[in-house]
Length: 246
Picture 1 (tube, rainbow, N blue to C red):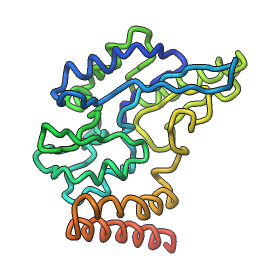
Picture 2: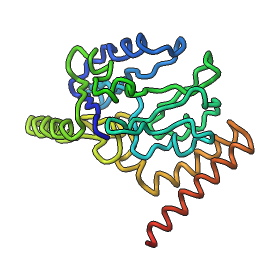
Picture 3: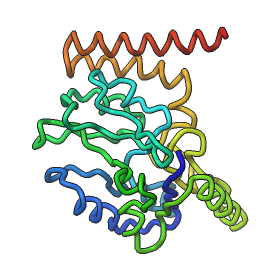
């Protein structure tokens, strides 16, 4: 993935400008947000700290939503400036499989749009032309940066060094291994409801998907859809085993 977003949660003030800008540019129904601001408290009284996180699609390199979709409505955009994870609304059947499979709890079903799945698109139609995302342009404090991924990783690591030198021992850059969105945080990843890095690329992650994702798919789309998804998961498992043997 050539381009990425770097979200510095240590700079975020929780204003919600990114949410408002995104909502204004895209036509999701009332109450359905492609990106939203979540709040997290950590510590204990009287040393309590309020943190914010821009909650949106992480655009995983190996996307559980794409792998589990029974109708191939989710895919990675191709091309030099591609790599983001998109949903084809015409193909989506609103089964909810992606909602359950996503380890970041991102996709939602839009009840006013045939129950189609909705999520951040990384402003793909702009990014493929080398333009920035709307949310990055809207952030008033520069907490959201858009640019070439390798440059953002370097900038993020430099910021981490500065924070650690200032006493923020837990500061680190999340997402370097397996996501298109990089997040700079100064606490353990689970404080922000994030999964361990490398989860989406790991056999542990796929076993988890197989165990809890399939059950929800069965309830959501019935026997035929469930068999399609189950077969796909088994195929992935075989591919991993064959790769290991090779």
